[in-house]
Amino acid sequence: MSHPFDNLTPDYMLDAVDAAGFLSDGRLLQLNSFENRVYQVGQEDGPPVIVKFYRPQRWSDEQILEEHAFSLFLAERDLPVVAPIEKGGTSLFHCDDFSFAVFRRAGGHAPELANDDHLEQLGRTLARWHACGSDRPYTMRPTLQIVDDIRTASTFLCDDVVDLNYRGQYRDVTGQILEKVAQQLNESAFPLLNVHGDCHTGNILWRPNADNQGGPHFVDLDDSLRAPAMQDIWMLLSGDNDEQQHQLRVLARGYDTFLPFPWNQTRLIEPLRLRRIINYDAWLAKRWDDPAFPPAFPWFESMNYWGNQVTLLQQQLQDLP
Image (cartoon, rainbow, N blue to C red; front, side):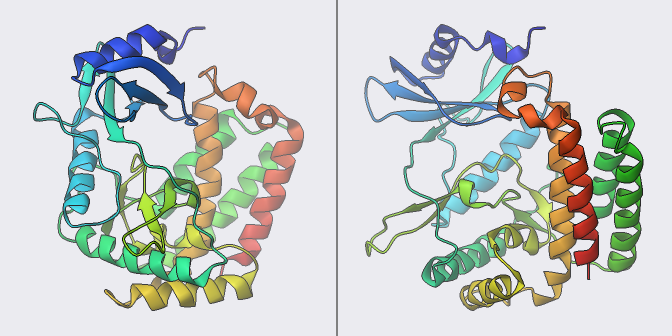
């Protein structure tokens, strides 16, 4: 079966980039991305640029442009965000059924989460981001709903995806998770901000800055949405409980420079982790018709994988406060 991305031949993409006003020199390098297709494209006049071809039917133009506008808003306020390049009065370009955006190339390496200086800088930067995230609320982008998001993803997986040998166990454990998370968050309300949404180290580049000490640069706001601040914080935690508590304290030390750290939202960490685990499986299942997915995730259809997922979710259920 064909897939829309099959039409993204090298000549097609280079012609599209040229038509948008970025005259290419013919060099094209595919970068690591599954949700979209991302390439480094050489220019005849200037450094290479990064071009993102959006997955058709995922976002409307209005939703993409709203995220672009927020990225540019952050960049104008000296937040280290790699925002799209505007040309001809727009940051979103079209070729047939594809939408695409162009970004400056930004190198760097992942931050070191065991390095307190890195964590403290991340805390300061996220606080500045979140202060801006309160000023210009999204109206078109989605809002994170922990219980509803878990319910939607787990129902889809139970109906059509989970191996039949484990489907009953999977339905039982996700049902218990939903009940416990709903009880835990009942009548709880947290301020919503425009957050990055997928703030893991793969989307943060540590780059030299003016004092040569280095600092974070955030890329790929494709999952940006309205959510509590903790959505951008919890993915920076790793290790055992003691290590994570130390990391939270260091992040808070930086965050408190600009905003009070949202300690009352730490109760969201485990529910947010569960939401990500379950949504990730649903994402893989919904993208399985994309030829790039089966070779990259061959374990996804195995019976053992779903047995391991049931065990993981049972452990996560025990970890819920």
